[in-house]
Length: 451
Image 1 (tube, rainbow, N blue to C red):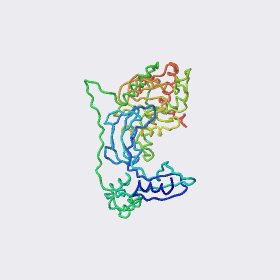
Image 2: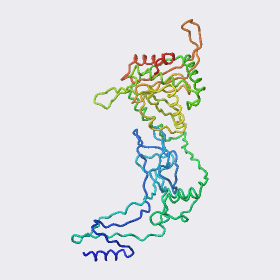
Image 3: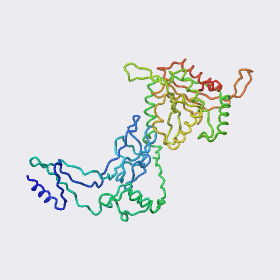
Image 4: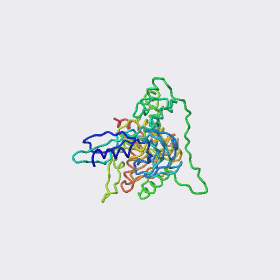
């Protein structure tokens, strides 16, 4: 086919196109505008073996415009609640789940209609050759009148926030499109302010249980079901004792007096016994590293994995149930730093917003069940740890003085240990508990070990 004939045929097929003849170019291509593609936004894998999440809050609805990184929804996994942000900017076309429904990892949460920025003209592989010369005809389509009013979500959001009409603006983009910079210039030149909007509160709906029927487990209950079922395969060794807190109480009061005189240094106003207990526990682990170890069963021969990091779990009661975040590297922290971490985790727990990173990697757990009430308990260890201790409610009880033999009041706290009996024997748990007890009952000894 001759170059002249090929150009004639193209002109006949596209009578309204402007043809540009180029030599020595290897392809025939056309420019097409992308007027939006609907993309499913998937629930990504958030780690820790999580395969499903419960939808507990939606921040969007069909027809709403979202920008990149806007919040889409909040989900509750079997470890924590997580806010999911959008990867795309565009319009919400469909929401796939109702509140309290369970979404599988990898499934679509919403469908988003996106408008991608114009790219370079796409090239097709149609090539016409005549002898040694290749003819390439470029087709430039006729500009449609409404293309100038086709705006990206970021542009539409600015227009909406400042009450502007796109028809009143002159665009500097290709084919007269209004770009984000055009809108920002108008806003700056006119000193415009955002429209005041009423913020609609998002209410988390919950399923009211039918006390006479069956209801599904929530995410945290599912986690407890799976974890405790697995823990039943571990032989649990129990050990109970009590700790005197009189000297510890004086030590705590002295620390709180220091905090009261230095309120600008700390995010909390006072500390409880808990930071002292945790630091004492970490010091005790340095003498008995087996208590911080883990049995590895995946190998052909079971092995013991020793861990230098003391990531101590602290059970926290939340509106959704009991969760156990852990304070990382307690062996490297001061009592005040530990108190700061407890404060941070407590505040996040109230919002149901503890991140996954704070929930994984625990090496030993302390459960302060005594803050609710009770004396002794039978705590259950989890498979990746070897020990857990439950603290009972501290009470003032009569005890005989070792010096005079007289009856004196003492602040007594009962404690209950459980340990993995495949790894830890009775003598080890007793010696370890006594070491921990000595640090708590003798703050001077505790202070001498701090560095």
